[in-house]
Image 1 (cartoon, rainbow, N blue to C red):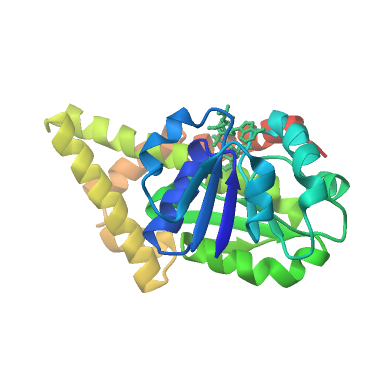
Image 2 (image 1 turned 135 degrees about the vertical axis):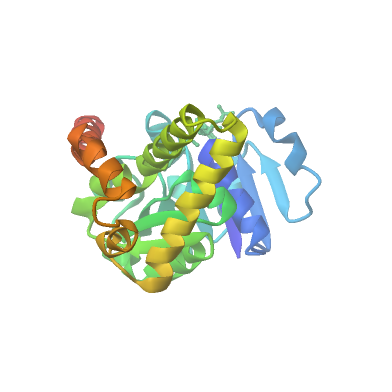
Length: 264
Ligand SMILES: NC(=O)c1ccc[n+]([C@@H]2O[C@H](COP(=O)([O-])OP(=O)(O)OC[C@H]3O[C@@H](n4cnc5c(N)ncnc54)[C@H](OP(=O)(O)O)[C@@H]3O)[C@@H](O)[C@H]2O)c1
């Protein structure tokens, strides 16, 4: 696949890492204005480092837009006239609607809006996808790219902001949960590094149980809560302190904020 990542910053590089690890590219353009930060990519034969977005577009079939929302107008003005029906345009730009993308590139272009998360760099991104009408025929292609970089979900665009909170910000929320349980482990007497490793391994085991058993979290909780035992005592205290309600309120606050900053 000939792919161009326009805006090779944090997310762009994460995607590039994933594409490279999974041998998914025949040629990959990585563009940014200051290319000096991309030195370590320069010796990889399939990769071309450039600040020339137009050349990247002309030489690629799939264009992945990874610039910040404020940088979108400049880059879209630059590349629009070089886009044609061959191209699949995949935007990762948070809050940028299909309507805005269609106004910039034209309704007749194949446009996919995506919301990956940073776990894409290790091939474990949860990526939500939707498309304009023309782009529906390219959704499968986008899905196949992101399924090789984790798990993708095709959703309605109206749920894209919610998906951003649950899946992209979700990485930060899960990190905080893991950090908190590790800190609890330190309080209980473990060394910090040991506690963190144990916390990560436990989280990973919990997730594997849900995935392998196709079970609901409460089913797995039932299996470890002995009547009048220590686990139920701990869970009740966590809920008393507002664990579930704090998590849900956090998601809702994040959602309210993203709705204020989105570009319709
Ligand atoms: N990070 C995440 O977890 C995440 C998750 C989902 C979606 N997103 C979305 O992904 C986008 C990128 O986020 P990020 O965290 O990767 O931002 P970032 O690190 O700031 O990357 C943006 C990159 O775009 C480059 N750039 C700016 N103008 C350009 C232009 N005209 N042509 C080519 N490159 C240009 C910048 O480099 P130069 O200044 O050198 O040009 C920069 O490296 C955002 O829209 C964000 O909402 C991010």
